[in-house]
Length: 207
Image (tube, rainbow, N blue to C red):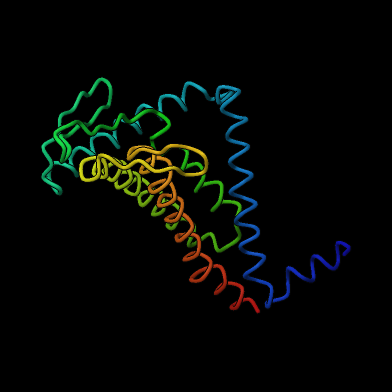
């Protein structure tokens, strides 16, 4: 298959869904490795700005998660603001806890979303509002994730399963599997909505 064949395949409307998903996967994987490389370089040349944004993002999601747990779930929480720690008594009388580290902030997912949406094709008149809306949704998805990790430990404190050669407890199951998948599922669904409601329609209008 030569370059002309690839171009023809990509332009064929019958292959649009496959091409779109392929581009999505390529952009997601590309950003992941670009981010890891940039992280190794200390986020050069804007390291101080990135670290400041991380602190700001952590403080924001910490406050939002505390508010949701207190006012919506009416959970009796104990907090240590200096450590960004939220704790509550679980159903067995022990402690469930989460500590919101810089890596738990929404900043990486915000960058992920910006990278994806800026490079993925579509009408800019809609991107100008859809991208900021996505950033807000990602922030509150992260709030749900943090609250969910704590609540799973409160309700099911003694989960112990063997998964992929590892012994997994409740925290690890919630943090590394359930809510990580949930987080990226929301990003994927926002992208699907973009493709179906805006990108594909813009192509049909042009044709």
